[in-house]
Length: 63
Image 1 (cartoon, rainbow, N blue to C red):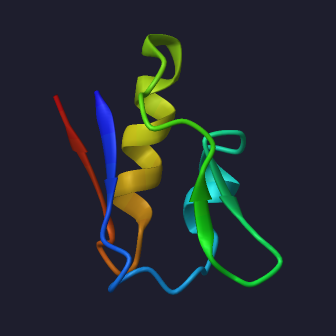
Image 2: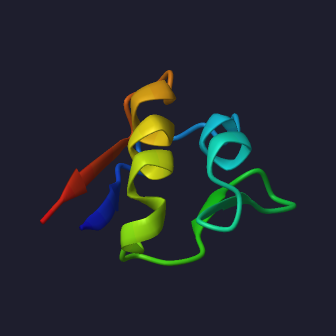
């Protein structure tokens, strides 16, 4: 699975980072950075939760 980020919707609140640290990171400029574009299988549930909790619906998963 790949993580797709809609940068026009992301406001850098960091909800994703709090749920899946090491996959998502908000940098010093307040912008979200992906630490990996492909979701490791053992972290899929964690990343799915991060995608679901994004208040701006800026994240999605694609095969």
